[in-house]
Image 1 (tube, rainbow, N blue to C red):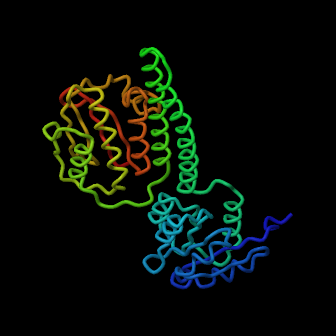
Image 2 (cartoon, rainbow, N blue to C red; image 1 turned 45 degrees about the vertical axis):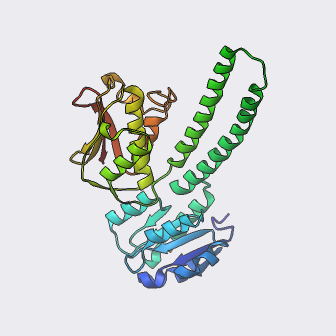
Image 3 (spheres, rainbow, N blue to C red; image 1 turned 180 degrees about the vertical axis):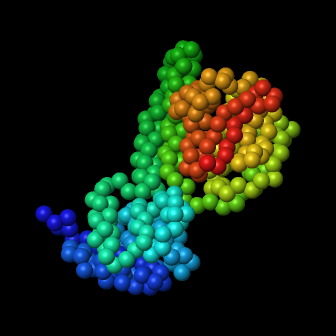
Length: 330
């Protein structure tokens, strides 16, 4: 049986501006393969019937990474394959880090069969790039969390109508509250599970002050010793700081928290009790329970976001004997 027994419709964009004029024609010569050439402004109308999108990547004339981001932002989940005549390892790394499905470099007409095979493999495989997978996971978890909270609300409401000893009532309310909190954390974990879709320069000091203020911290207990600008998703950077601040507050007695620079990143340190040396790797494990009343998602979320940015985060001891978390580029 031919690998192309099923008819596939492939949308190609950027071929003229990228200089690969014959790409649509050569692909169309493959049996069981229909090729539709579309300009950037025509994509929305063509993708509805497409099985995959092939984008010529030759910036700035044809920016395949930017096109990929727009396609995902518009919720199209089909495979996106970038093609380039040049072989630029840095560009390939950038594209794959962004989440493109596949990148074929060194294009020539005789590689049409290889490109067709790659497209077919990705069309047949249900799992696509990390952005699509993360969005699916977020949707599933969000629906699950929403549905689970409804019966919990019923339990809480009925509990108020029962004549139960305060000891039992308090225990039940604590358990229901913790389950509700865990469901909220589950939604947060799902929302940060995929790759970062876009970054921008963020003033680290301003972000730290805002997050600390929003969390109810006293201005006297935060020391900002940085003037750095961080290339990051602002919401995600804020969430990292929120979880690191939260860890300090949960474990310390009115701690003083410091945010400062390192050679390759930044740190958040406190003057609390610190973390035993043997536990400094385990604190990032899901369910370890160092924060959020033992739920164990605080530092796990912080590390997940850091990883999505291509950063590492490590726990150490601060100069004051408390905890110090260093976030740095790989």
